[in-house]
Structures are given as structure tokens and as C-alpha cells.
Amino acid sequence: MESAIILILALILIGNVRQLKKVRPLVLLCLVAVGFTVGIVVNQSGGPVAAVDQTKTQLVKILRTLNKKNVRQANKNDSLKAKLTSKAQELGVSLDEQETTPQTSDDDLAKLTYQGQQIITVNNNQPGFSQADLSTARGAWQHYGDLDSLNRATQADALLNQSLMPKTKRERLTVNPTGWHNKLISSGWLYNRSHLIGYQLTGQNNNWKNLITATRSLNDPAMVKYEDQVADYLKASPNHYVRYSVRPVFWGNELLARGVQMRAQSVGDNSVVYNVYIFNIQPGVSLNYADGTSRVN
Image (cartoon, rainbow, N blue to C red; front, side, top):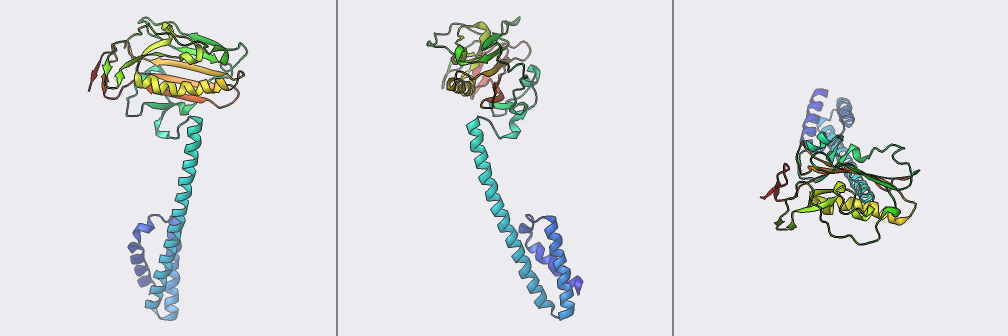
């Protein structure tokens, strides 16, 4: 009799297979135990049909209760995710784990292939500055690496503060960085002369060491979005400092950068923290990174 009851119990469970997918293994073991118990009851009562009906009723009740709990937990998870996402947006960080890469060398970043996401985080969004890098002992400063043998900009570093921010309007740019083959496309000019460290942060303008050829989408809104975070923080107090580093990433002897890595860390707090890589691409346009020429798709 026990075997018959267990067989019927299995059929009942199969009939509710969709709900069973949400049930933990421990709960299933409990349900099987219920079957054995019912088998014993049947032997004692001699009423198998009534026992099966009772078992089915109890199982359905248990499954429905579990399903309701799963729904409530899912709603709680959705609510928590929404709160975390909102907070992350306030902090200017991303919760998307799949869009991060541990690579930090030029070659590693240059090898990355654009997959539809222009901005990705590097090293879990941690800039990786040492305590010495964050020291304010020398006050605010800025440094621009020398041009390489191909006249390409190499890197720009600074300890930013209000004292470095310009007080005059920016003049017209006249420098043509490597890979400069600009042209009009449907959305406007394809390229911008892009500052590694934005003019609003240091006042550097026609500085060869601080300029690269960048697509409009790379320069603004992508880079500007992160520059604005730093600028807003610096404007909030003359005592605020931000360690800042930006480097263009070239592949081999190409004249057009594949992208730009931006790192920032506010000193003394985490109001500004990021380590991102931005692809130098323009939707609807194929770029020849060897020389900066392009073709509209």
C-alpha cells in the first residue's frame, strides 16, 4: 500500500512541476516524508482514496504557500535592487558586473573589442592610487607626459584643487593632434580635439601634451560626464583635492587612440572614485585607427 501511495504522490508532484521548480530540495524531501506518513495512515485507516485526496490537498496548499513566499521575496529583491541602483547613480558608479575588466596595461586595453557598451569599468572601478599618490603635501599640481616618437600624447596626471581651475573663458583650439582627419557627419563634426585633463579642471588649452583626436561621443558626453563629477566636487570646497590620471590607449603605431582610461580619487573620502575605459568610437562610422580616416556606414 505504501508503494501505491508514493506512486500517486509522485504523479501529483509531476502535475505541479512548474511550481516545483521553485521549491528547494529540502522541501521536496519533506513532501516525500509526507507521502510515507500518509501511507502509514492508510494502512491504519483502510481508506486510500480519502488519504490521497487529503494528501493532494495538503501538497497543493504547501506549494501555493511556498510560491507566495517566493513572490514576496522577489518583490523585496526588486525593491532593494532599485534602491541600490539609485544610490549607485548618485555616486556615479555602475552595478553592472559584466562590464568590468581587470586589465590595466595599454596593450590589454587596446585589445578590447567594442561590444556596444562605450564605457566599461577597470579593476572593479578602483583607481588604485597609493597613499603617496594621494598626498597633498606639495599642494595642487599637474604634469603632462612628453609626446612619444609619433608625436602622440602619452599621459596626464594631477592633484586637482580649486586653485588650478581657470577663471577665464577658453580660447579657440588650434592644435591638430595625431589622427586628425575631421569631417561632417549627420550628427555634426566627427572628431573633437579632446583634452586629457579637461580645460575646466586646469585651464590647459592648446597644449600638445594634453590633446588627442577623439570622436564626439568619446569627448562629450562620455569624458565630460566624469570631468563634471570632479569639477562639482572641487567647487564645493577649496579644501577638496582629487588625484586624477588620464591616458590615451594606442595600439602599436596607430595615430588614433583606441580609447581613454580615466582614473580619479577624492582625497580623504570616496565622494569621487572611478576607473573607467571609454572606447573611441562613433555610432554609424567605421574608423581607421592607423591614421584617423573614416567611413560612414
